[in-house]
Every structure is written in structure tokens, then in C-alpha cells.
Amino acid sequence: QVQLVASGGGLVQTAGSLRLSCAASGFTFSSYCIGWFRQAPGKEREGVATIRTDGTTTYADSVKGRFTISRDNTKNTLSLQMNSLKPEDTALYSCAAGPLWHCHQDLGRYFNYWGQGTQVTVSS
Image 1 (tube, helix red, strand yellow):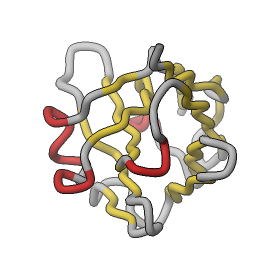
Image 2 (tube, one colour):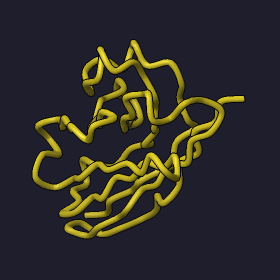
Image 3 (tube, rainbow, N blue to C red):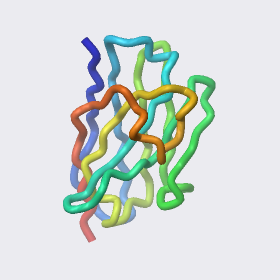
Image 4 (spheres, one colour):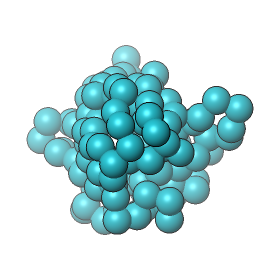
């Protein structure tokens, strides 16, 4: 049974930091592209960042320089360090796994497995 369990969300003030984690099981984690996606109320889902098995990363322009994605293939975990948070970062953040040949935050429609999400709220 495939599971992607995100955690670490919460309420933080503008300019604050949060670290999200995602624990994966039920599939060969080290063979997949893993990414973070977010969805704010009334908005479409937005890709945040992805990371390939070799550590190559991609970021949405809106988070570049503020967010850092990382993975640990020995522990089947994914992380997202979020710094300098802004109110517009408020959203439900989900982790997902997809094929390496579609490893980009704009290609979420090709991702196979999705977690339930963790809420991030940034107050102004």
C-alpha cells in the first residue's frame, strides 16, 4: 500500500520558517521523482519544487531562493525547508511521487502517488 504522509505544517508569522517532512512507503522511493505541491483555497494546485534521485532540483520562481527541497533515499523521506515565508505561501502542501522523465513542478499531472497534505498558514 502506497503512503505519502506529510507533516510539519502550522501557523507562522511573515518572514518565519517551517520545515515540512514527507514519509513514503509502499513503493521504490529511490526510483522516483519526488515533489512538493500546494493548493490555496479557490486556487489551482501549484507545483513548488521537485527532486530527482540524483539530487537535481527544480523550483517554482515564486519560492526560488527561499525554499530548499531535499530527500533521504535511505530513510524514504522528503523535506522542504521554507524560509522567509510570505502570506501568499499559505496553502495545503502535499508531497507526491512521479516518473523521473517528468520531474518538474509543472508536470504534477503525471505524478502517480499523492499524500494527504499538511496546512501551512502564514500570518501578516
